[in-house]
Amino acid sequence: MNLLNFINAFFSDSAHWHGYDGIPARLGEHIGYTLEALALATAIGLPIGLITGHTGRGGNALSLIATAGRALPTFGLLVLMTLLLGFGLVNVMIPLVVLAVPPILVTTYEAMRSVDPAPVDAARGMGMSETGVLFQVELPAALPLILSGLRSGAIQIVSTATVAAYVSLGGLGRYIVDGLYQRDYEKVVGGATLVAGLALVTLAMFWAVGRLTVSRGVRRPT
Image (cartoon, rainbow, N blue to C red; front, top):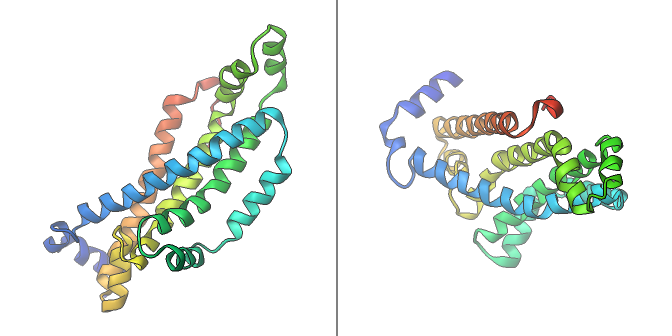
């Protein structure tokens, strides 16, 4: 069978659309893991990136942290967390968050540093507080690049959350792991197709968010 036949056989099988191992259930689990990990990574990376970008301090430290985070192997970190914490959702969230924080953190910092200093200086000259400068002047101008960092982190999480299946959790990785174990390549290809499709949907959602939230005057290609 070729690739298209595998895909057609997987999605045309009604058994794959019902029950705890059905596509809706596994897709819901995968989206849940993704949203939770992205929320945690954003809560860590976004405030730090905004503050350090606003003050212009800590850029070298952020680069070092980002390099270290990107160098850590996700699967290796998952195995280590499993040995330390046992099986559970926490040991999956840790490597996914570590994976997503660097692009969010560094891109947010760079976005803030790339803002035109003229309106920032003008706002300060008018007596605007530093908080006002940050949220009313710098953040709107930096938003396109900040969204690109969030998008990058989200795509990496969507693609990597399949590792949850290696520690007996659910998600779309279940099809890939179980399919390899059972030598059911129809299931493997179907699971991989679902992950790729979810990544494309994520890209489309961030594009739509950018169109809705970024004003035309500061809109950049993302």
